[in-house]
Image (cartoon, rainbow, N blue to C red; front, side, top):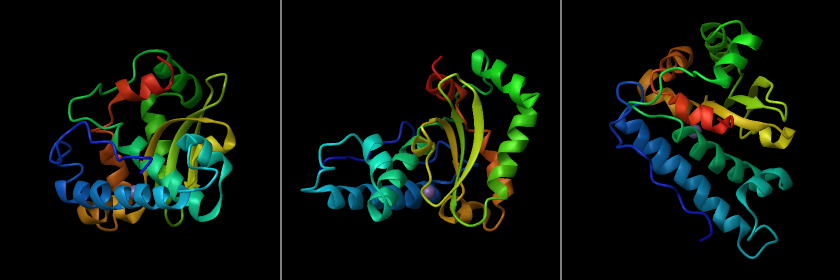
Length: 193
Ligand code: MN
């Protein structure tokens, strides 16, 4: 087995009440795990067997792309949360957000809207280009900005399995509540701070 599922940097109840231990059990314990297991089966004995996951995402398509990208996306998603992380960005990311979106609140509103209005399953991304310019990217299914040569900075999962146990059909409410557990220290380090 090439890729292993990383352990979460917090306990299953640490993100309550925003994300329940039951959602962690299913979303991290079953969904993320299944993508990684399937990815490992698909690459065995192929040209992808020794490739970094990011390269597989960029070079593959179909079932392999779906499982490789879903594995990467979920790891990225769960590692950006903390019960006691930095509550707001402060450095050059903060400055860039205000420059491009007006204010942190305006940015959050736009980001939530992009996730709430994405039809079907997918992800809403914050990504940066080589110059550090930001964009909000809604992506269906297993979409990932790496395929557009952009650096992923933050992501909210808008597949129903991410929120249905805790919020039922209230996707917008789930997206709004996620800000309470985003660790901006992690987001800033992804932006190169
Ligand atoms: Mn998910």
